[in-house]
Length: 473
Image (cartoon, rainbow, N blue to C red):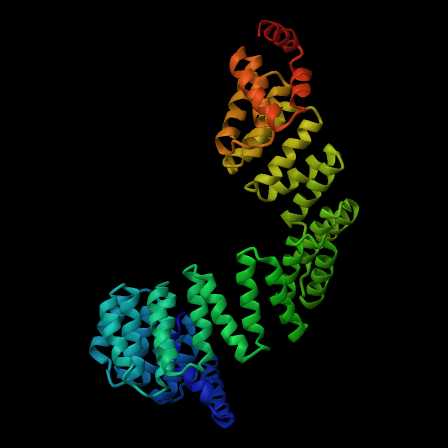
């Protein structure tokens, strides 16, 4: 739910004294006890309105509707309760109904009413009318000009109209440059529009004022991570964990950064710290196992994947990890076993079909390998390595035309795929396209001098033909 629907309530909550909060808690308890015991108790419109707004604020729509119906029994056709009804209509997507009610009951001297109308109009993409309402809202001084700008910006953020949001945020910032909430939302909007440089600038402005802002350092780290500037990302997340050593999300992200920096031992320590901070640690254990894979400590990785499966036998990533580890250990039987378990849970992950195909190839079960590669390609047709691998299997079983077709697909996707010119040369030679084969072999040798020996190893009959050509030249 967007902010304007609980605008007044949220502002009231922040301004309540301890005594007022206690009074509201008592009101809410009284109302809920009344409903639970099916008792009839009187509440005035302000009281029932606060209960409705509270439920809307918490996202409890069913409870809000129930409270509103109770209110209408006490105060039929009350205008303030009709406004609450319009909010509920809008939340449920019945926006035209909401506008009709507002046209009858809204008082444009009330900021909440104006903002609700503006929000609904914005959600209908009637932006000119929405902006007209927001212009009226900015004439109020109930909660501060900059705070109203911020609320209007939130409305447009919900609609993903970030440029419109930025306009109101800039207006609010001009009025009150010290409003940090406005700066955070401004940085967020710049991120969403892809202007990462400007977002970084805004977060640095916040950090100049508040050097110990966990939130600003964290979001700054996220941007650097998106930009693959892992060194700066690490520095930002490191600041967060220094400021608050129990910030679990920062430990999680910092560990991901260390993994990208290929600092696997340090990443393991980070993931272990994260695992100690959260109740369920299986995701962390899987990440640690992946670090051990990179360190070529496959036995440790296998032990961790098995540990995950003792608490969650449906964790598909653990089965995929086991399939990979056993494939690396050239244990095709175990690879096939765990790959099949992963596929039984989720058949849409192309990498596990690839591991299965490679295991079948190791076991000389080429027809099954072809089927597995074909499935992997259906799931990820733009991956040239899959086409290359499929070509290799076809080549191994003497299906030269199929191999050529697979290599050709790999070449279309990536003309620089590993040894692609060599394998095209081999298949062309075996299909009798000698001249084309020579051209491609020359290119393969230029890229990789050892290509000649591999070519003649696979096509020994080519030696005599090449020798004759050399003599003729």
